[in-house]
Image (spheres, rainbow, N blue to C red):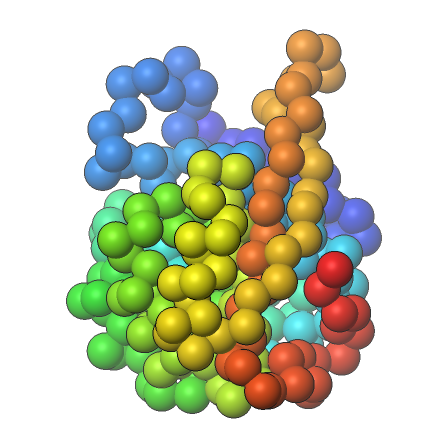
Amino acid sequence: MLRAFELAPIGTVAIEEMSSVGLLKLSTRKYWRRVWPAGLGLASYIVERFGAGGLEGRQVLDLGCGVGLVGVVCGRLGASVTFLDREAGALAAVRRNCRRNGLGPAHTIGGDWNHGGHRLAPDAFDVVVGGDVVYDDLEWPAIGTALMRTLRADGLALLADPGWVAEAKLRAAFRRSGFAVTKSRRIVSWPPWRTTHLRRKTIDIYTLCRRGATSGRRLPGVRPAS
């Protein structure tokens, strides 16, 4: 089914996802079929941080993209987006979602940060985004290695988590991979397609940049993370 997400100033973003009727039947291999609160929080944060046109001409990687909301939003802000996911169904959904949101043909790569990252050119991306990709702390070293390889020297990564992970542990892990870490918070109303009985969810947005680098120096409209 189609969901409409209102994200001023870019307007409505239409995303095909699984109906909530089948939500409880999802296996972990099919979580990609939904937009989750962390993805919506990250998308909203990106729109506010960069602004309309603020990613014009920039290269963005959507890491573990799922149905592609975050990457589509980056595309609507002017970025050239590469979508990476291990599930072929997710990449097919991304291609449809890019078309329905007026973007060009989607650039998709099958795999994850371990088995798809080697097909990404080194130092290729200004920004790497990921919603709900840091839930497993055993994967943090591999994610750190992938980010260090794919990000340009003054690029940044934005990773969103719905409060599941231990902040101190995450900071320490990515420091060991060579990154400085700051955290912002975003409040989302969930589920966004309802008008009543909404819940407020706090989303943690972790900004990673190489230690010693001036993160985002070449990105217009970027404000320092708080």
